Length: 113
Ligand code: DGP
Image 1: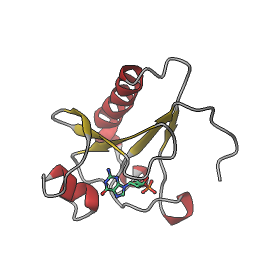
Image 2: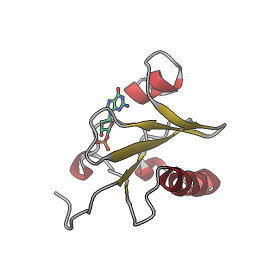
Image 3: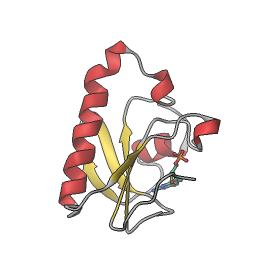
Image 4: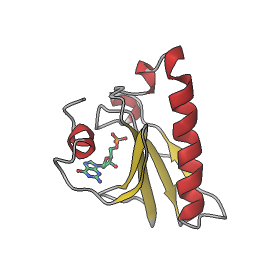
């Protein structure tokens, strides 16, 4: 498993505020929230980013999207929410373990920074 902060959270070495766990992924609250609801959907498989995903990951990626939808619903984001996957340095990715941001609870703007 990757030796990133998310790898350490997945191994139980670092605490986090969990909102969902299953055999393929976890969902935690972001430590530095950018919206009233800011969740991170993190696969147990240590892919670096979406750029690291392959055909074999099709089912896992679909699962992550459906979990994102489920936790957004559970958080009461009925009026909408945003899904973000930062990829690589130019994409603003800081933690090199694939994760999806679920953001909501305020009106999002476009374009993002
Ligand atoms: P990104 O820039 O896409 O790699 O986003 C990484 C996110 O991870 C960022 O929004 C802050 C969050 N984060 C970093 N360290 C921790 C941590 O120790 N715990 C939690 N819950 N979130 C973290």
